[in-house]
Amino acid sequence: MVDRLSNATGVLGALKHLQSASRELSTAETRLSSGLRVGRARDDATAYHSAAIMRGQGGSLSAVTLSLSRAESISDTAIAAAEKIMKQLGDMKATAAQAMSGGLTDDQRSQLNKQYQDQMTTLQAFVRNASFDDANTLDGSRPNGVSFIADAEASQTVTLAGRNLMPGGPVVIAPPSTTALNNTQAAADAHGLLDQSIQNVGAQLTEMGAERRRIDAQKGFVTRLADALAAGVSRMVDTDVAAETALIKALQVKQELAASSIGIANAAPQALLQLFR
Image (tube, rainbow, N blue to C red; front, side, top):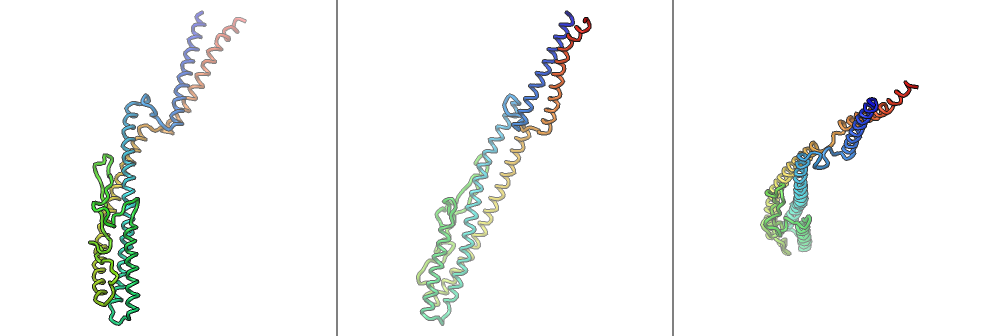
């Protein structure tokens, strides 16, 4: 009777070890397959809560990154257009310089005047087409500029200034005119206005470059912050693959030993019976 009780106790003990090893193995395999050490609040309530907050912050920073990327694109478009405008002004200045000559025939002056008008039309097109995502900061349509959120709380912004580079405006002071090169004096006047316009556009390009660098700096900061948050979440909830793999191997051995113990415990009564045969 004592032997039977002892044997039953041994089997139950081995069975508990087997069940425990199986549960631990299943949990470890789930962590490894999901890649998450903390996948539910019950796994680690504190880590789960902190990770949820940090993920929310990361989502906000993603929105900021998108906002700043849009700012980059609008800025790049405006800078590229301003550079083309500056070159076009240089070409127009060269045309005006030719028209300053007093030895031109009427036909030659007429051709230069037409060339100048065509160049002016192209210049206007450069300004009107300097748009990205319906935002044009060069045609005077946005006097207050365009602002973009720059932090997760939307308490900071970066702004691209609104400018007016249309001919006859405060920057490109040379106005559209069908008689700009009709005579040497008109050509000289146009030449002077174009020269000042080139200087004005150059100053605007300097400011636009500074705006672009501010956007780059802010986006770089936001990206580093987002990376730090992602790394923090990973440290809190992600599975350590190497450690989990080693644990699974150990639990598999434990499971095999527990199963063997049950077999040994079940075989013990048969061994005793053999003694009496």
